[in-house]
Image 1 (spheres, rainbow, N blue to C red):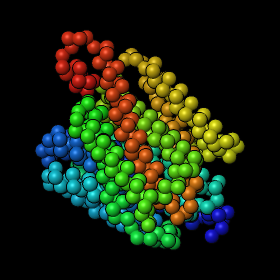
Image 2: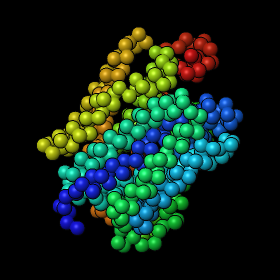
Image 3: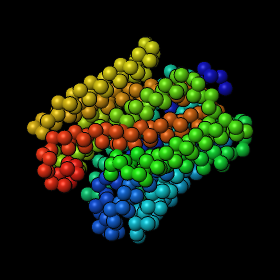
Image 4: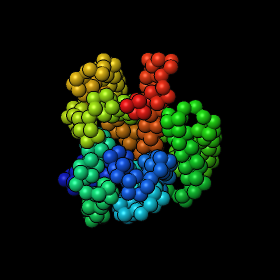
Length: 441
């Protein structure tokens, strides 16, 4: 197929089909925020089990992204997408009707497996459907907007369902979209796999899992509980396995990742920008959620609804980035978008206890708009800088960097925020006050 062939109506409709799994996977990261009290009361969940219910989805998703991206390149992206939709749908049913915490944790783990197949497959299929650079930029801008919208809509959607149904409804809501995807995918989505994929690298897959999981777990533990030996050892072990994984990719006959991709400055630089963007976005979300609920005293649902207000600005950010990138060097546009995001942080420094909601919403809107522009541009650069045969593994690497960025956002910005909070407390403050704002309130 010619690289200049333009996509038609079928491809644009197919893009809408791809938005279904992307929206659900991104929503599943945050949809449980309101459901946990109901789940805890119904299933008798302990504090440790509650953490695992939250975290196991993200851990499994992050750990398997590289594996699933490589697998999709070999067996076919559409086929992997369909398998992932089936797994996601069945796991959603299992989670909705879980009878104890262990069953729910296991179902969330399977949801993570399904999510790991869906996310790189959607982006890789966009690379295969949109060969024209201009059309691909628009498609990826839409992809970025849907992903960010899903993360924002998750708490609101969950809160709405819980006001009318039982907690299992937040999982059952996935089923209609997965069924629709299974019906439409074979008709509208093209199949694509690398012509010379070779044998799947099982050893490389295990090493990638052993590298990613301990590092993300260790970072989150350090953010939640401070410096401790076990999380530090986990991070060190993950780094060691990461070195072994890289060495495996250098010597394997059919590597999961072509290391030559990282020699491309556009590819590696875009990965770094994407990681920094996610660090800022997730880190800010922690503070905004706490401010709206604990300082302003809003209910969780009201706080979630107010947090959607910046989305009005974000909706036009990705298309604007695409338009500007056609007229100016995308490096300058990306830099300008980071400056816009920094301006949002500057506004947020002026937030006080007595501030109106307009201050924090303005700052959050500028921040989110700038970061969505960044992510839209770097995603297109990452996908466009590799061959269609490697689009799946490249997408998986990008998503893995996003997970690392999110974990670092929680750890780095969360730790700075906690230190700043404690610095203003009296030396003799009670222990609950020193623990943090949630415990203090």
